[in-house]
Amino acid sequence: MVLAGDVGGTKTLLALAEPAGESVRIVRETLYQSPLYPGLAPIVRAFLEEVREPIAAACFGLPGPVLDGACRTPNLPWFLTEGDLARETKLARVRLINDFGAAAMGVLALPPEAFVTLQEGDAEPHGARAVIGAGTGLGQAVLFWDGNRYRPHATEGGHAGFAPQGELQRDLGTYLEKSHRPVSVERAVSGPGLLRIYRFLVERGVSTWPEVAEAIAREDPGEVIARHALARTDIACEQALDLFVSVYGAEAGNMALRTMATGGVYLGGGIAPKILPRLREGPFLEAFRNKGRMRELLSRLPLLVVLEPRAGLLGAALEARLMISETETG
Image 1 (tube, rainbow, N blue to C red):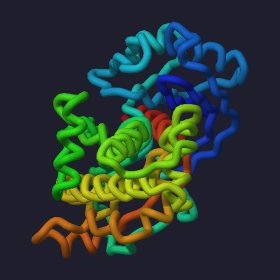
Image 2: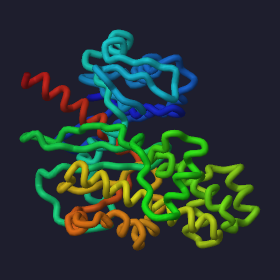
Image 3: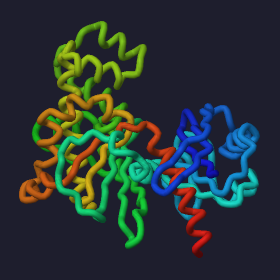
Image 4: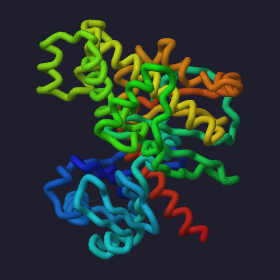
């Protein structure tokens, strides 16, 4: 058995898992409120007390860059290292990886029905695979074939600069620059980014219903905007989602070019499955392909949406299984 973890600023999901090849069976999982704990080790110890199973290896996806086996989580006052976590939990093998690197690994563990195809394309068998996903932020990772298997390479590409296309996007960039300098692409392509786009449009005079503004103040803003946009019951919400998917599509295309993702481009994160009808429409795909002389290349790349919300957890379990294999063969 292996222990897998998907650590977030609000919640931490731990699971006892049994990987077999590139598939993963979750045996038991428990959700914890991250801010209630002084670190990850107390959460892991509580889980181990529950399951009382021998753990061969443990892997945890963390919301931040992992350097030399250490991570300072940006939304929690935690500084984590593999050595400290192993010592404090008495686990023999511990690995910390970026949460979107884990999500990329999770793509390998998912069955075909866990994906929706936006563009069929023609995948190279061992081509690089780009994984990009908007949620609280904008995660980006790449899967590279090393001759034997795919290995994840997490990035912090969501913090790269926003590259607006056209007058409306340039005006959005100017608007974002009032509160964020420099303007990263995740300031627009994320849940909070969708709210910023909505406010930008309302400030420009696009009409919105008072009850929509009230719902945004009470509920999850991104979900409210997406709901009204898909139902076509609010003009500002509709235009906000249209602009959002155009920027999202352009950035997905940028990542595909930077990584030469001939194995496919995968849209992960929490937002894409909720806005599938709009992703299937023209603006997203047009923005993805609209790269001048590279348009034909981008039109040939497979483009898929990941439906499984636990891809990061499954990826961490798969990485833990690979740790065991590396030890046995090393």
